[in-house]
Length: 149
Image (cartoon, rainbow, N blue to C red; front, side, top):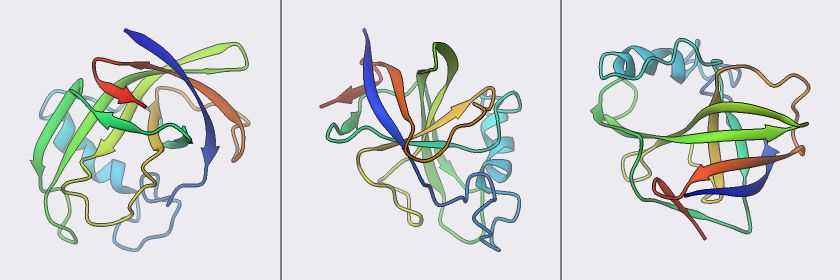
């Protein structure tokens, strides 16, 4: 079942895209992780390299079953291996639909750049022009993958 959840764009850490100037990840964490995901069946080359952080508060979410789940990915020498989930999502903005994935390092294995429990990181195939902090978006989420409460 698909539900629609309202959210607001919030600032992120900038590490996924590399805009956060973290010297450990000069090209961004996504650029470093992509080869590991690709060899396991998820090619992110057609996605924009960066995430949109969407706060769905006062709602929160819990993981049910990811479309993709990758365990024990040793993608960086700076942190221990991590698990990753990806969930289907469609973003609705200005009467346009953008297909993508929710990108989620497993909270159980993530050691750095923690997210608020009401924030989802969204990867889209194309960049939404003019998107900035504070803009409202609608997310279509598969309730078989993520439970929104």
